[in-house]
Amino acid sequence: MPAPHDRRVAALASHVSPPGLPGLAPNPTSTPRVTDRVGGFTVAVLGAAGGIGQPLSLLLKQNTLVAALNLYDVANVAGVAADISHVNTPAHVRGFAGPAQLGAALAGADLVVIPAGVPRKPGMTRDDLFAVNAGIVSTLVDACATHCPRAIVNVISNPVNSTVPIAAEVLKRRGCFDPRKLLGVTHLDVVRARTFVAEAKGLDPAGVDVPVVGGHAGATILPLLSQTRPFPRDGFTPEEVAFLTNRIQNGGTEVVEAKAGAGSATLSMAAAAAQFADACLRGLAGARGVVECAFTLHAPTFGNVLKGDKDAPAFFASKVQLGRHGVERHLGIGRLDAGEKRGLEIAKKELAASVAKGVAFVADAEKAASSAERGARDAGRRDARAAAGTFHAAGPA
Ligand code: NAD
Ligand code: LMR
Image (cartoon, rainbow, N blue to C red):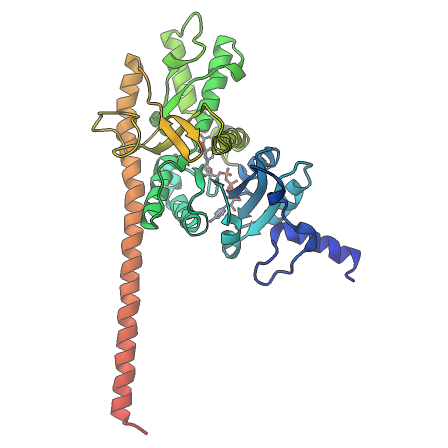
């Protein structure tokens, strides 16, 4: 009979060491209750111990559509999982630490949310994160292809304008790319637009909607103030349009500078990601009329977001209707006013370059991997020939 202290440690460890993984003792107290809940979904958060990951996981624990919450990180996830698991809601929380447990974290996932990766510091652009985050996202999405190829994937890691194309290229190579199921999370731009417009016009932010289309970096973030609903009775002055557009486009930088080196938006992002994940889950559950803005593939094979525009970048954020298989329908970008049209032209060029950068990253990684494989094969052949030569030179014993 283990001592009470040992039992306590074993119970805590069960949150980071799910039963059945190699080298980990099964814990009878941690039987998942997933099957008890009709319609409950399994959600995996990759990067769950981070600045976004922790509050996002806490919010997901409180989502009644979530039956199982799998928290994965390369560091510090045991405490986060143990802590969140004490919240008195039905979702069953388990922690998964390090690459050896990534497959178990993803097995059976309906929705995978990825906030893994490094954040900006003052003076950096989101693209400056590419060098580190491209590899992180491609590795994690590759694991999704192996362990949950039909899951919906929400990519938060920056630069979203490139990490989503990277994810698509990885999934294509693994033969499981479904454009309905890969969504870049740009919802924070919508959350900011709702808040800033409501502040400026004295409205309730919960009742305002402002579509934000394009992408998720600087000038690619294109708020469509002309489509604000309800549209303010006194409209927007040119000064208000300039101020609001600039503030929405630079909301991320506002937070990065205020945090002065301690990271970027985490709490508002967690709120935005939790709202967006909830929309995806409601869609999966069959709810009707679930509409959000998201960064998805549309051209040339999917949707009608910029129908007939031959310069349209392959990935673009716009309003989409979510359903049982992810994106059911692209709802287009509606009618733009003159200023928004000018913004769209700028956004399109920058987006096309960011998408191409993501696509090239995966192609280059593939070339490097196959040349390394060829090198290893050639070296193996040379060694075999050398061994055979030695044998002939020495002659049989
Ligand atoms: P953070 O550094 O606080 O947390 C990142 C977490 O990812 C850490 O816990 C780290 O251990 C983990 N991690 C690193 N490599 C990993 C891997 N290979 N597998 C699993 N986990 C791994 O950063 P943060 O503030 O949470 O931001 C995370 C990312 O989200 C950044 O790239 C940031 O730019 C981006 N972000 C995007 C938006 C958006 O609107 N889409 C908003 C805010 C932040
Ligand atoms: C944001 O918009 O807050 C995020 O993309 C983080 C950042 O680097 O600005």
